Length: 205
Image (cartoon, rainbow, N blue to C red; front, side, top):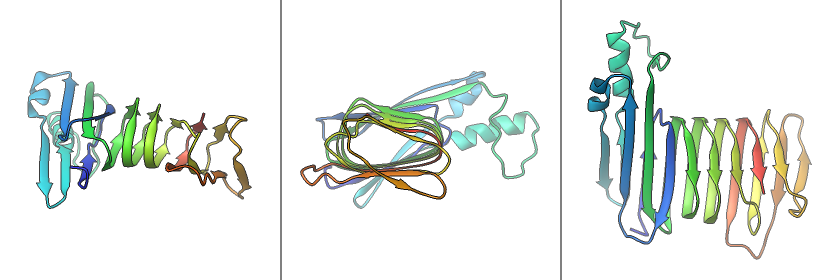
């Protein structure tokens, strides 16, 4: 499992909690709430393995489209979520040292501890990681990114938002025409961080 990639695509997630454990297996727990049980019954999570990659997906778009059809909303290529009281909450348990890619349109991604090569791509949502070992590449268009910056090489960029750091972290601040950028080269660290947000705050503590 260490040499495998885990590719997670969970559109419209409310939250995704990443748990790194000592088991050589993957486990996904989904807690789904909708205003009508019939939409909950439609929901599915699929795990599929191809070569050295495990793909984890959900059919949340299908659930949304079913609601859209019932409400007789126009099908113009847009997924409607307004008016549907729903939650798609996930716990994702993965082995240490894996390569993990996570993407979602919405949701908050949290973890007390991750270890591996982790890439997260969000459109609207926050990312908060308390402890980590490895390489992180975290992107959110509209959202806040918060994690420790100590003992890591860091590159952080934001277009409209701001970057907050502690005084003990000696970051190099680059003056850009638009946005902010900070960097820190730590030759003694095995950890690296790349952070990007368009309209959001990056907090390195």
